[in-house]
Length: 201
Image 1 (tube, one colour):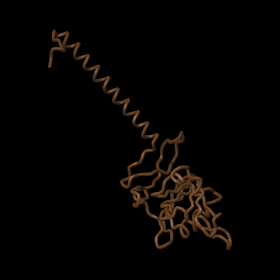
Image 2 (cartoon, one colour):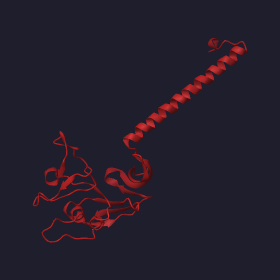
Image 3 (cartoon, one colour):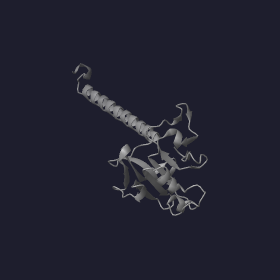
Image 4 (cartoon, helix red, strand yellow):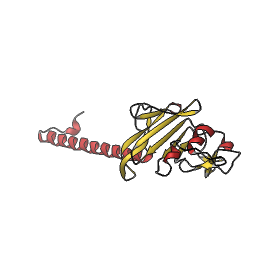
């Protein structure tokens, strides 16, 4: 989910956080399998997100990185909610200003910084890893957060798959045209030599 209210405390039903992106495994993208979700209510769903991602902004950096705490009677910070209330196993914070990705894994009830594996941070439970990729996407050439396999292979977006399929089809057509052209040239050469290519097996 992207920019979806995440309600996390049944004792305070109006308190929510709004991760830039989060994923829940095993729950439909539709509410009651009919309508697109307008929010995600933990005590109704009973399945916590497996990963949350925040894109750093200058005004929220301290809260996103757990450098602030909430005051008594106020909602907890994002870090506190993700770590303590929800127990989200993986938490990533990306700065588009520095192109730095910070990754945290919940260990013993607290977030600990994760080490990367060749520039990727694995999420074994879902067979994916998150990494930074440089390239052109949505008409912007920059560094992007992208999903990879655990072996480090980039997982293409649907539009990239469609573009690649078109490219492969165009290549196959060019190769077929080239083969046809060569066959026609060979047939013409055989005719010059007095051989009817249609009679050859």
